[in-house]
Every structure is written in structure tokens, then in C-alpha cells.
Image (cartoon, rainbow, N blue to C red; front, side, top):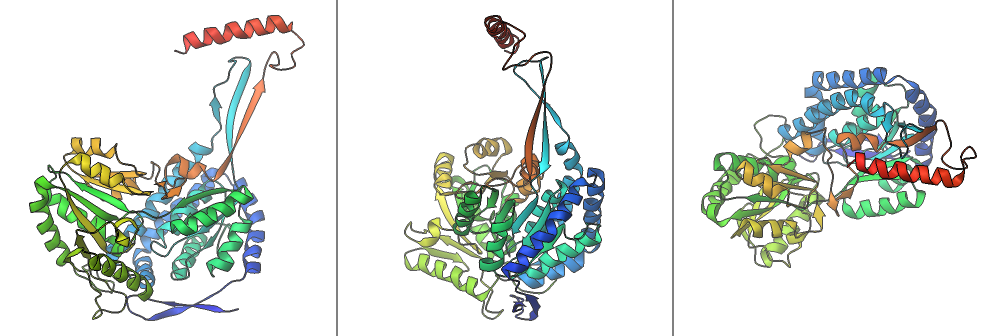
Length: 492
């Protein structure tokens, strides 16, 4: 078998090699997963909960080991890596306790109360295929898998080839937590081989990545008539109202824009600042961003790490250079930090970005933010919504003002006086994108129930609704008509 060499983007150090598995290897993983899934489905929910709660404890106990690996594979700073650890622990606890409630059969309304008794049941879909990204390789692997496992499914995962060791660590942690063999398997390899075979074999597909790839996978899932959920790209806006608290807004906006070096689907790339506060906010924000500490290593003091690869750094630099060549002004940053290494780019603020610049509308997925002054909050909302994406948005304002603005924004999550973490960490609420930012949701009840098939069971009493031979058809029709009219009055 061929191998994939894994290199740390921040240090350039070779971390090791993993197997580039074949399509046959991937099919074999599904063959192992199917009988394992049936046994796991038969495991009482309380026992499944114990596994997830044990995972919660293991993640916290082995925090530093996990943080080191995430940083080594991604180049992100330690605070951004800790977001992943915290997220997985919270998700494991939430799903562990929520699964029993969601899987419990529920009574449903019927057209003829007393004659029909109806319940809704949920069975796991079977073996869930997951294709996870490099930017949050722990959170967006373990977090999605936890929800599927809690509902009784097995999982076959393809971790990104740039961050495979984190996906393999998830498998080790789940095994140590007590998950039976073959219920979760990580298959390393390319998207064109392993990824495509997962799409061909799975009973449900979960994908996080680019909109372009998400469209192709959606077509394939649709052709097979299997469920599909995807969190895709974003060009996320932030609105700074004239009544925003600057002491909170400046550091909050910096975190929203530059966490994980801006390589976050829900990070902010567009900033709309009300003219009434622009002269105070923009200089303070520029100073704050210019003072960020950039570097590699495992210390907690670094504000931002590297990008994932030299190739991606070149892509980000090209988008900035294109904008500047077309008239954008660099307020701070706008350059590669070659003294730190080939994957480092300065946190960048741009003004006067013209509409014909690529980064005006397209996702940069890096530490680059366009700042624009607006004359009113209505203008800010119009500009914020003027995008084909709709993943996340942020508003900094008096809570009453911010709450009203939030309800006008076309995004799956909107944070008021926070960049992204408040909505993301609200695991009891749905998270996902509008428009070109995805389909389906993670988190919330829907983010777990999507990994199930619903079954409606209706038990009829006394007489049949159709094919009734006990009552004259005319009498039956009149009786039902009267009952329906009466039912409408009492249910108003």
C-alpha cells in the first residue's frame, strides 16, 4: 500500500506516514460495520450513554495530548485548539443524555381521536459515512460521529489527508471509552478513492467542506437516495452598531475574525461599521489586530498560528494582492510572514475593497477581513444579506438593538455581542447554513434525528377508516363529517 506523509504546517516537521487505503479497504470497513451496527443498535440507550460520558471524561483528562496533536497537524494556536476539545466534551455530554429522549416513541395526533392511536418511532439509518475537514479535525470528526453513534449508528470516517492522526485519535478515544469494535472506523486515504467509496456505500452522508465539493457529493447522495447533510462555505458578516460597547467589541471582533487563522467556516470576513462609531472603532481595531502575536508552538500566549499549507497561504496572498491591485487599501497586514515560515500570513484588514475583487464575494478562508463604513443599520443589513452564502453572522450592539437586527439576517446562526462561539456552543439548537452554505443541520434535536429513519405506527380501534363494512357508507360519511366539523371548533 502507498502511504500519505503528514507534515506539520507550522514547523515543517514530518509527523509520520499513514496508509493510503484503497476502495476495497473502504468496502471492507463497511462490511465490518454493518453487523457491528446491528449489535450496537440493540445495546440499551443507557449503555450507549455510558460510552459517550466516558468519552467526555477522557477528552478532558487527555486534554494536553489532544491539544498538542491538533496544533501539530493544523498549525493553529492553542486557544483555537482548545475550542475543539471543549466542543467535543460538551457534545458528548449533550448527545449522551439527549438520545434517550429522542429515541423514545412519541404519541402523535390523529384525525379520529379514540379510533386511531398513533406513535412515532425512530430507528438508526445504519452506517453513516463521514468526510471531515482539516480545519477542525477533532471537533468536526468526533462531534458529528458522537451524534450518529448516540442514535445507534455505526460510522465510517475519512479524515482529511492533512490531518489524519487526529481522526485516528478519535477512534482510539472511542475504543478506550468502551465503544465496541468496528462501530467507528477511520479509513485514511484520498477523497477520490476513499471518499468516493464512502459515498457509494453509506446509508447517510455527512460532509463538511467547500460548497463546490458539497454540490457534487449532494448529487451523488441524491442519485442513491440516501440522506445527506453538509456544512459548506461562508462569507460571514459582522455589523457594528453605533451603540456597541467598544471595550467588548474590539477584542470580540478580533476573535471572530482571526480564530484558527480565519480558517473557520463561521468566522467573519466582512465588517460593516456604523458611521457613528467608525472613527472610534476602526483605529482601535486596527491597533488590536496589528498587535497580535503570531507564531507556532504549544504556548497559550500566541494569538494566531499558521495556515494549513504553503499552497493555501499562496491562495490567500493572491486574493489579497488581487484586491489591492484593484484599489483596496491595506489597514494592517496584507503580507506573508516569511520570517516565521512559508505558511504564515499576517492578520489583515482591508478597506475600499471593490466589487470586482475576488474576495469581495468569495470566501477567503484565511485571516483577511474587509471593513466598510455604512450610514445606517438598514444599509448594513442589506449589505450583510447581499451574498450567496448564509452560514453565520454577528451583531455588536445594545442587546435590544442587536436582537432585532439578528432576526433580519439571512444566516443559519446569528450571534449578538459574540462572533460565533455563542451559537455554536448552544448544542441544543440547530447549526447550519442557508443558501449556498449547506443543507441539513448539526446540533439540536434535528442534528441527531437526521441520523434516524422515522416510522409511524397507527393502531386502529373499534372500526376501520377505509373498507368499513359495519356501518352504512352514507351514515359513516355523515358521522365523520360531523366529527370533523366539531373537531375544528374545539381545536381553534
